[in-house]
Figure: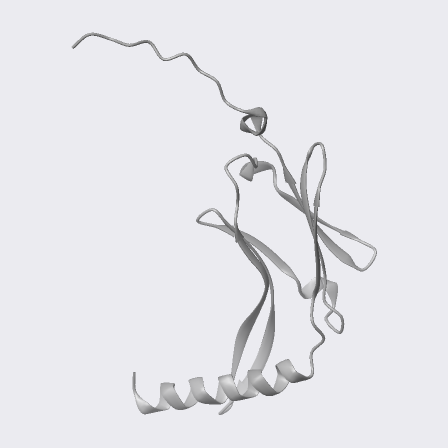
Length: 126
């Protein structure tokens, strides 16, 4: 890593440490319902519209970006609120996110594997 990139990284880390000291901790709650699970997120001091939800490589992430101006360049630094592996019994293709009042609600519906999987395996001859 060249010296300029290293300096930018150190400046960003320093700024994030300073910023993090002034940011309220996110409020996160996990709920289990008969139709699936729910992740509820509220980050005091952050506009709810800045929250983002992504599924990448079977990981569910909730985060927001903080623009940092360093050496005349704006760098968007992600602050991760939630980052967990999605269990096998969640229907990844049906995950939805909605706003309810001042909370982001990520809905994780169950798939058919949630009630158990059963299959009789025939034993064959070689």
